[in-house]
Amino acid sequence: MAENPTPQPESRGRRLFGWLDERAGLLTLWRTILARPVPRTNWLYTLGSASMILGALQGITGMLLTIYYIPSPDHAYDSIQYIMTEVTFGWLIRGIHHWGATLLVIVVFLHMLRTYFLGAYKFPRELTWLTGAVLLLGVLVMGFSGYLLPWNQKAYWASSVGTAVIGAPPVIGPLLLRIVRGGGEIGAVTLARFYGLHIWWAPAALVALVFVHLYLIIRIGITAPPQRDE
Ligand code: HEM
Image (cartoon, rainbow, N blue to C red; front, side):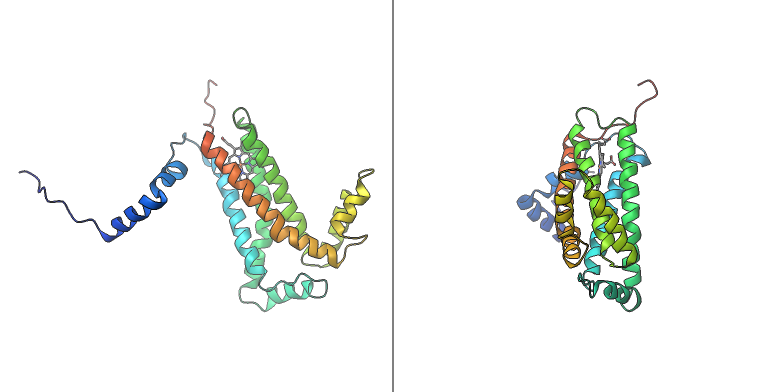
């Protein structure tokens, strides 16, 4: 029997999607960014996305911590104690942020090892590798600047040693040390500087770089795992 030729009315959802797509090009975005053909890969290829998810989690938990954290020598330590003992789920948010930082460094490092050992740094992906290397540096800067923020003994002395290393090179060392510490010793200005670096400068640079990294990955595509006879 012949099919009913009467056209079915479009559902509300479809019409809304069509309206949005016509104006914002949603389908093109979907096809370009997510529904691209990718080679058959394995779990090692998920480490880049895992880094991104961990980075996002750090961003969210960090934003939550700023609600109670106070970046001044008089209040920083107490505000962390308050988060840990008084704020509802404060211990969990801080715990995720604290351990997430270590996990992020490990996962980014493993991702770098994967791309290195599978030769993904070679032509035409040299720029992807370079942006990745700066990303790793950025993640380390985040870790270093965040370490001082609890303003406890460990934070203070680790940052004293860490910044002293920055001051070690001849000629420019003393100037670098003054810039990083904001004076001769670690104090209120250092804390303000590290806080600014930790919540604004480094994350802004990281987000921008992740976009460049992803743009290159979408443009060039990812490598396929090497075959037995390659
Ligand atoms: C915050 C840090 C980073 C994020 C969020 C990130 C994210 C990603 C993502 C999502 C991919 C595609 C999927 C995959 O291959 O896993 C990728 C690929 C790649 N990444 Fe990263 N990455 C980071 C750090 C690095 C580092 C440190 C390097 C090396 C120094 C690097 C070099 C590369 C290269 C060469 C590729 C292409 C891999 C291929 O074509 O097989 N990335 N990255």
